[in-house]
Every structure is written in structure tokens, then in C-alpha cells.
Image (cartoon, rainbow, N blue to C red; front, side, top):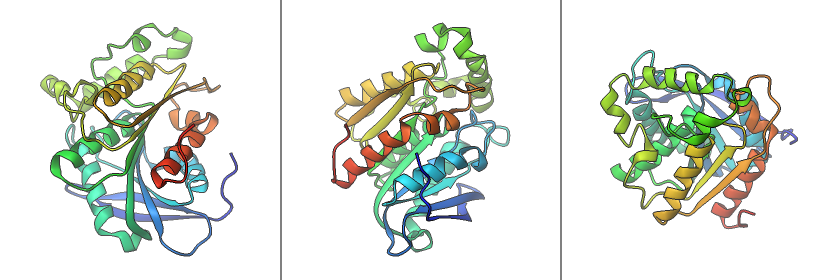
Length: 277
């Protein structure tokens, strides 16, 4: 997909739960009035790694194709610094910061969408729970791209995908969760494992993207089924495999598959201009 020729990228600092956090603001389309929508995006890295640069190519494309939205990509506290719940508390704090700093972001405050990929998608899903439970901020939607949702690593796709596709991803996920959730009791907490939550009603509409050859596929699709059964408007799409040298490079995968088209259609539905195909 062609990158929008008019693209502004600005480094800034947002407020986490305890400390300032590096962030980037991506704005596509013609400069002019404030955007009615804002997407707050969290990068992958298994909670213990990753940074803003990892998702840069994907976010450039996203801002270029969703020009009614600014895209705020925020970092968060890695588990190597402070484990759960530091990252999720940071993520929720960033949403609150964004709502209070609309002018700085060039945003009208109308629609706020939370999004993420892999571990960042876990944070996005949990932010939707936290926003509901704490009464703020109101969210228009959630976009979960190949999310990590099951610390138990118990799904069939995690256990049974051929090793050629898996390429050690299960081991990597296990190591990530050991770092993020050193207290075994936390693995049952809904803010750590949204897939295990028994309270999924009254959440914003969701777009959940899985991938045919991704060990995280089944947990993504199971979460979509649970949201649907709880009355949450949910679109689940399984993307075709993407030829990658590193199967764990999910940001690159999202650029090479139908992810951007699906996200654009989902956002258009939230805006009331069309419905997802």
C-alpha cells in the first residue's frame, strides 16, 4: 500500500503511570483542521523488548491510509524494569494523557481508538477493560493485531503449528511471560490474561486480526468469539501467511498482509461512513 505523501512524524513525551514516556505522533493527509479520531498504539516485543522504531514502517502506512485519525505511538515500561502491572498502568495512563492533551495532538477529542500488536495488543485489550472498569476514557474501538492473550500458551495453534512456522515463537512467548508475570498468581488476572476474563460485556467494538501461520492465531480468534458472545460488536479476520525471514516480525507481517485494509474498513465503520466487508 502506498504511503501517504503528506506525512508528519513528531517525537514527543507522554505521561505514564510514574514516569514520562517517549512517543511519536504520526499525522497523514493534508495539513489543516484537527483530526476527529486518534489511535493510541502500543508496540510489540513480548513485554520485555521492542520499541517505537520496531513499528515505524507499519505506523507510517497506517497514518497514510487512515487520514481521519492521528496515530500516537507510545512506549511503556518493559518488564525488565518493572513487571506486571507496570505496562498496563502505563498504557491506561497514556490514554488519559491523550484525552487531556487534545490540542497538543491536533485532535478534536471525538473518537479514541486503542490499538496494538502482539504484547502491545494485549495492552490495548486490557486498556479497554480498564477504561470500562474505571469509567474513563471513553473508547470508540479497539484494534488487536496478532495479540498475546493467553499466558498459559494452551491453544492448539501454539502447540501444534509446524516448527517451520513456529520457529521458537512458543519458547519466546513463554520467556516473555516469565519476565512479565514473575508472580504465577498474576497469570489469572484479567488485566494480564484478558482471554480468561469472565467480564467482557460493555466493551468498545473490536477488530481482531490473526494470521494463518502465527502461533498466536487461536487465542486471538477465541477472544473474538468470547467478545461476540458477550454482545460486543467484533470483527475477526484471519490473514494469509506473509513470507518473512523472521516469523516473529509481526509489524512487518502486518505491512505485507491485508491488515491495513481491514483497519481502514473498521475505522470507516466507526466513523459511520461504511461497514467492514
